[in-house]
Length: 209
Ligand SMILES: [Ca+2]
Ligand SMILES: [Ca+2]
Ligand SMILES: [Ca+2]
Ligand SMILES: [Ca+2]
Image (cartoon, rainbow, N blue to C red; front, top):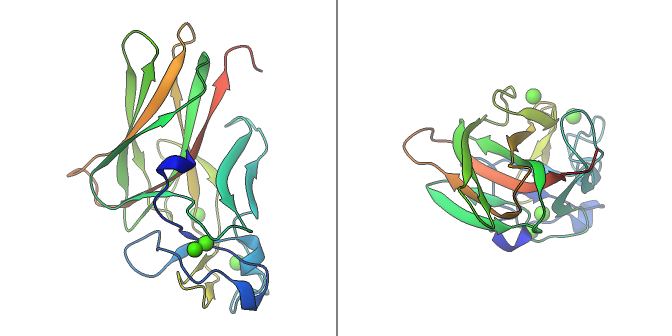
């Protein structure tokens, strides 16, 4: 879903000299995610670095299929769709039949409410609303993709050894008889005030285990 990304909210880098200095905060002001590579070299976290793994790949487990998010420690570019206000966008998907789709997101400065709408090649849509918790929160409507991370200043100047922020996954069951066309994500307004950050999605196809 990299075509809809609008911000870089993950501090990355491998040495003090090459840490990315241009990020947007996950929340309102001054904290972004950080990769393990950058957390290992930035002030305050070197003795206990808990960054996001350097590539956004997460092995299949009981919660989700294999996940491949659009960030990489070697990339200084965009890696999230950040929605501080009402927002709506469609993510095209390979036109297969799916058992379920999983969307990966977190929220800054309070919870956010996210609508996930599955649009099929033909027939009616399926939609569900999820409360995406603040990144310091518990999983609620979803599950933890990763938890207990550190954070960093968006200008890459320092790390914060917080051992707490999370990224969550949200599952919506699909219609196994119909081919999916796209997934519409809506950040609803006037429900919760948090800043919605979406990092990617993946599907479990019919016939896969
Ligand atoms: Ca970055
Ligand atoms: Ca950047
Ligand atoms: Ca830590
Ligand atoms: Ca936590």
